[in-house]
View 1: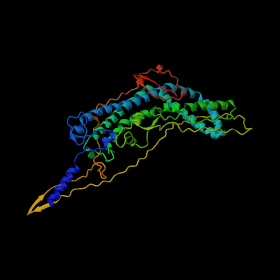
View 2 (view 1 turned 45 degrees about the horizontal axis):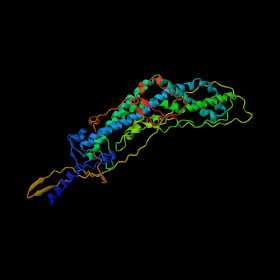
View 3 (view 1 turned 60 degrees about the vertical axis):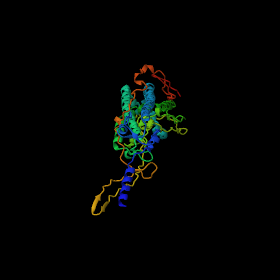
View 4 (view 1 turned 180 degrees about the vertical axis):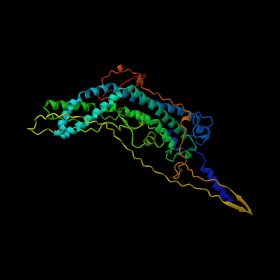
Amino acid sequence: MKIVLLFLILSFSSLSLAQDCNNPLLQVFGINGLQAPESGAGLPFCPNLQNGQTCCSAETVLGLQTNLNNLAQRLENNAAQKDIYIDQLNSNFTSQYQEALANFSENDNAIANLEQNVPGVGDPLRNQTNLFKSIGDALNNLDNDFSGALIAYQQTRTFCFTTLLQIQAAAWCLACDPNYALQGVQSDGTVNPSPIVCNTIQSACSPFLDDAIALNPLFQAQQTYQRLLNIRAYLDEFRANGNIAPNTTIENDILNSTNNTERTVSRPADPQWQCENLFSPQFVLNEQVAANGAGLIGGADITSLPAIGILLLPPGTETPIEETEVVPEETAIIEETVTEVTETVTEVTEVVTGVTETITEVGETITEVGPTITEVTTPGNSRLLQASAWNPDVQTTGFEVSVAPDPGNVTNIEESEVTTPLAGKRFAITGTVFIGAVVLVGMI
């Protein structure tokens, strides 16, 4: 009886460690798997499969290169639209914004009068005009070497995209791995990555985020351009009326686009944000976040400037107010910081350890040393072990990863070729069609 019990323990151990093709990542990625593991020798990619067994046929694994190429193309298309938009903003808003700010200091006395006598109008006017001047200063710095800033942005983006594609390819190899339960794959398809994976993502994409943030003043200038013009017109009318507040309200005319191509990017407060948001928990690449700067999309948009209500002076008090000299204060560009709080749920799983039993028969001691039994169950079981974390060598998957640094051919477009006057207009790239370096742009 005792010998039979020992046999059952060893048999359970063997079954528990058996490979299978019930990897939930197969369904997550839409990959057709085999019914049972086969030898991976001869597969074109994925060393983790070539040196062991696979749940994907050679034809299926070969098709993953096509999937990778398509993913890279989608990233390039989004990046091309972003580059073209940035180039158009620089060509059509930088100089116009700077011109609108020129001689704006002549309005400082008018704003000071309103601050003193109609603070409900003067205070927001002061805050907003200081913001405009800060944006103008940032544009001046960017205008000194826009080409260098754009090229640096494209180069760091290329490195980020290449690394993300390599990680995605490695995740596809993981989906075909019959040892998935020992590689950090959970029953719901989530993956437990090692800290090395997070460090790889951050090292590759943080420089890209930094360079994307450096281009934010272009977007902020477009967002606030109409408000800048309206405030100038209001102050001109104020002075023309003998320093009496005109019966006018400056409406909420700040551009607030829902198109990610037309929005800023900002750095999250949580340093782990890129690790948790550039890929889903199932390691599906978030293409929008990646293509638009690898950070919080729209986090630095100037969209919260309120309408300025006008309080008319009471009748009989329309005496012009003496002008006073005012020194404008320095104000930094406002950047909204969003902290994303994520809840970490740790699943406590039960580990069953086999008991080694000593069997004594007719004075002879027979000792069988049984292995430690670690429970590994198929998907759907409530106690799938959170086993070893996933730690792939993303540079040895064998897949070819190629990313064009300038997919929109923007750096080869001479400034003289950009002739469409866009200053003061709200425009968006809609239905963009790429024909070589020719881009069709929809105006709104």
